[in-house]
Structure formats: structure tokens, C-alpha cells
Amino acid sequence: MSTLSLTLAANRPLRSHGVFRLINEIGRMFASIAAAQRAASDYDELSSHTDAQLANEGMSRADVARVVYERHFN
Image (cartoon, rainbow, N blue to C red; front, side, top):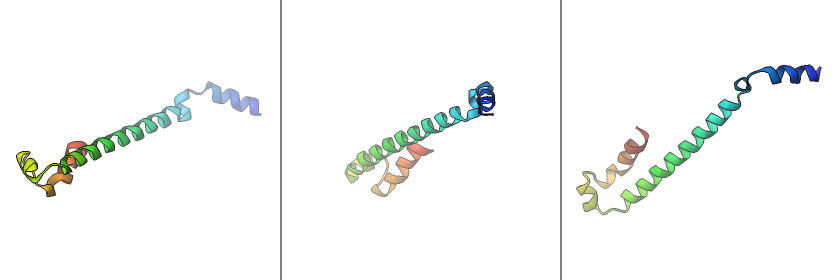
């Protein structure tokens, strides 16, 4: 019986095993982590600016989180 099961499983396309879906989801997870790291870096950079530097870029300190979110997640 187990030989028959292995034979049938071996004849199914690899996609039906969900391997490709799993690999795709892992790739999406790493892409999301990378995007979050870029957003955090951008937030840290903008937060380190003076109020005058932020004003030159058309924003106030209160706008930093919104601006970073819009740049990276919209």
C-alpha cells in the first residue's frame, strides 16, 4: 500500500504538493521584512532631521510617521 501511495504521489505535479506555494510565501515574508526595514531606516533618518530640515521638505515632525507609511506602504 505504501508503495502505491508513493507512486501516486510521485506522479502528481510538484505544484500540487504546495511546495511552490510555500516557497512563494516565504519569499513574500522576506520581502515584507525588507520593506519594513527600509521604512524603519527612512523613519530614523527623518526623525533625526531638525524641524527646519523637515520644513524644507514640506513636513513637520508630526508628519514623519504618515509620510514614511505613504512612501513605503501605499
